[in-house]
Image (tube, rainbow, N blue to C red):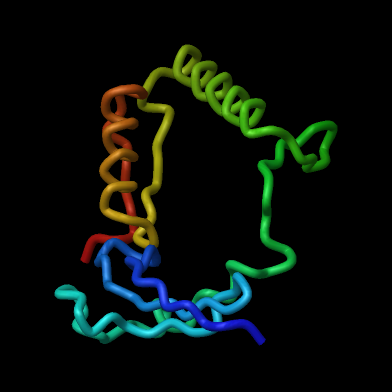
Length: 136
């Protein structure tokens, strides 16, 4: 068994930004606890921040983008995936207009990610059709 390293980080599960201390051994997350020095959570974590990390090492986790071709999902490059998305959004926008496109933001992401999502929709797509599950 190797030596454990303790890495301070910010939880990415939601937009709160709780401080975490991640125990890493042999390049695997072994345990997560709240960072007592973090002003947001002062060492406390929700159940997700403390225990929802096993997906990082899941064998069935996607590691490359997929595109449906001839009815089947096949692995592709990031370049091809981004090109596919851009072409489809452009086609929808030119055919049906900006309001035919909407986006749903995620509460499990950072505030910065949600900010850039709404900025993309409003400035690139020209649509205010954005919503999310993170409002109360």
